[in-house]
Image (cartoon, rainbow, N blue to C red; front, top):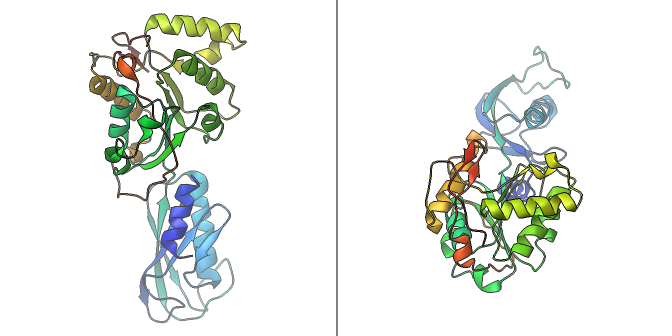
Length: 308
């Protein structure tokens, strides 16, 4: 497997890594400039020369993965018998400079319901370097022609047509962000209940709807056995305070703005276009219900959203 496929595999699996490149060679060295190695938590692909050089690079790469480093760094190694090495001697006689570049994990955003608001929100989020999962129980809403603008964005897009969105919820990684805006209140409630029961902590849970809808849901969740502090993990209404309006595009902008506030700074700017993760899916028209609403961000409440 070449380094590009290795890096893509790590990204597809949601795993961090480090790309190690021989940036410069002076004198004799085991590999030429441009040689690459990809380092994961427990796997490696390729080689930058073996011996102390590679062992040191591997150890440093794993330290960077463990600390969550986001900035690249240079490492210089002198390959002579007098150099002090941790992993045996390497006597090629040259000097090698390595560039270690972190391969960050893309944040996961799972969007349940691709009606009017969901579609507009997916279009915005698809321009960001995230892993965007689109989930709906209605096949016509996930039609690839309809989602062409979303699929062609920077995000890694996964499309999931399923009658039970809970099955997608169960597969989400730790720290994923969930946005619930389906066409059906019963479906919305089932997803909220399932999200609160997950063993892995989510980054955030947002529910589209009015204050009245949330009052009803909160009471039902309490009756189902959820503690008040657990129920409070759900934000409803959703959206950036101060951005008012009921047009689907306006609501989508408000929700995206709130999400941007909690994404790592390194993930807010679009990176190079990526290979799509394309599953089979379907979206649901959200009708006017998803098209009317405001929301509450971390700091407060905005105009009410429709109870759908």
